[in-house]
Length: 171
Image (cartoon, rainbow, N blue to C red; front, side, top):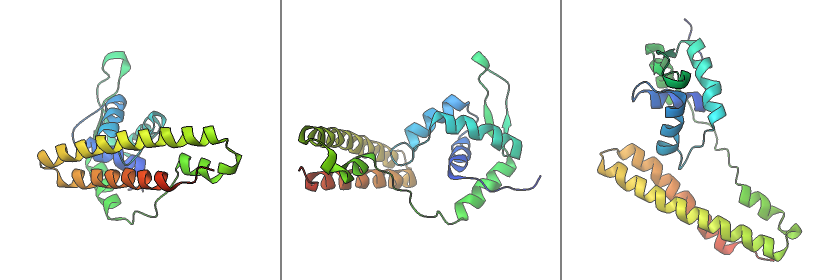
């Protein structure tokens, strides 16, 4: 079977499947736990990619479980495709911040709306930063310096967002 290029979501799924066979729901939970602080995936993306990966021969389906849950396991060609993906240029970041987008239209906000936006964003970034710090600490403790490094990126992102929010205009 020929090798096909994979997108970042498919690559993330293949990377997670290196840990062992998982259902779509288990993959979603693993993605949220391991990648969530710095990489988002939706349930629809996961369930859209899995049949494509199976068709490409990068994953194989296991025996159906309860409620027709279908476990997937990475194949040798899936491991090769993942390895190739790791060597490709990652491309440019796709920055999409819904708070910054709303701030760009700050003149159309009422003062109360803008303050609520900032308060909510501050709370989110504070909580997310604390969670990412804890996860990074746990990753280091478990001997995973690479996972910890990725989580430190999330910590730095949330810290930068909090710094930006402090300086954002209020009127």
